[in-house]
Length: 137
Image (cartoon, rainbow, N blue to C red; front, side, top):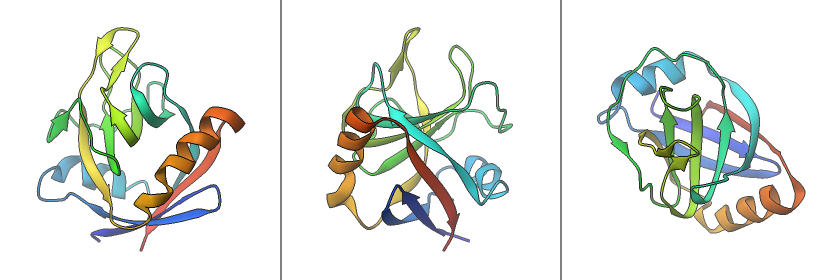
């Protein structure tokens, strides 16, 4: 499986798993599909939304990690100095927490609906948590 359907609120996106660049992260996440949660607006990172995951352990280390994801890129921060989380950039992001700069594994890239990303950010910022669901396409 290389393709995903991601639904955020009433918006649907297609995406690809970055299996060549982040094989362990992709396999760990794919094993948990379908994956449903909520996204909230980031606090320190800029134009992004995130899924706080507390101490959830995906059993992966760093691979294909970055602190500066492009819009439409999704990162998994596997935990460590901050809690485990998934971050989706909808604009300019410098990935960070109250502990400072973080790097997350870029493991999903949106392939459609990029024009809807600013609306995700607006809704999360002004309306609060939004439902999100990842499923195989």
